Image (cartoon, rainbow, N blue to C red; front, side, top):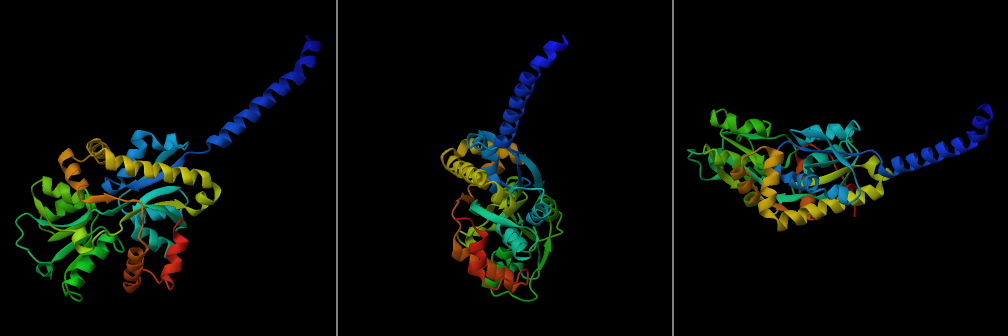
Length: 317
């Protein structure tokens, strides 16, 4: 017995060595799941929902897990700052501010959408012009958001700059209730919250964001700089999956309504209406991004001294 064990030991060692090598190789190839984040019930992030639902990440050889669902972009940027996220769908504004203020190291992989927000008032509100909102209370999702920019642009274009409306921050999921209870006079938010307010028959669209700033940039797909440096092949695959999603949305509008319902929990009528207000487009226009950087600088959210080079360093070509 003893002689047999001694004789077979090299063979057993060789066998287990092979198992170890193959298992290590498989682990290295598969890697840890990519940690994805997006905003709660935000239809701008439909490409992420589609990629998850249709298996586009797996088709590109990447395993993705949802590691965070946030109520606002700055909260997500804190997740990147803490090193707990690898990729995320988020507004361009929070991404710009986080990088400029060195609270997160990220790169913009692609644009997600243009337009897609709206200024909402109560159904019985008598307002007709932007100047009618002077001295009123308007809610935005957060400072330095695209919605913050849009309402301030609308007011400035209407000749209202100082001592105008009172602008407060409220998370979009609470906006409709606060509006209908007369605590605010208007809110501006991303879809589907404006459309949900309309389908509940309690509010109406006062201005679409595309009426304030035509074809404006909105959300982007970002990746952690550290993740990108360590996983360039995965990053390229994630971008391919994202582009697949945008193409799928364009060609399968009815099906993606159902996917939007599944991931947002909103009713089908609200999702269908909301999607009419969103343009999914992966190309980020430099001139509009620079316009937004100027706005952030003017309001003191950032101090970006060389906007063009800053923007180029933020994006991946």
